[in-house]
Image (tube, rainbow, N blue to C red):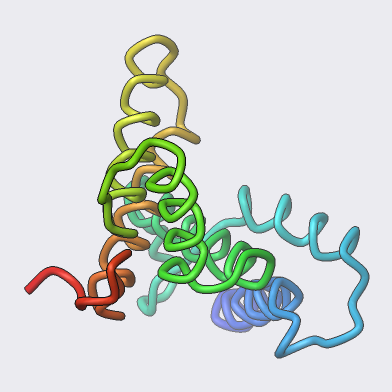
Length: 152
């Protein structure tokens, strides 16, 4: 007969397996449709902390989901400081502005807040948390559109 502790270990192992499926470095050669299925399962998968049978709070659950999405998107689009530098570089060229890559993360958070004001959705909160993490990563990278470094 399986004990509750064995069940918890099994759930954690399945969760780790699903997160591994999201990472091309960890699981090279996995088709993108399988990665997408794993992402959908991770979105609703029961997440446990380190104490037996303790379920994470809704905010911790959201952050776990954002973590999985962040890993996946990083593989598709590259590091935020590179992607945001390309995007903001185009905007600066089009409009003669001098925005920095970190400004793009702020613009996107504003966009998600505006969307949430119109139609509140859980995804908006996840996206805001993700862009906040991207903002942090861009600042840590020292990336600025003019090459002078990041925010002190």
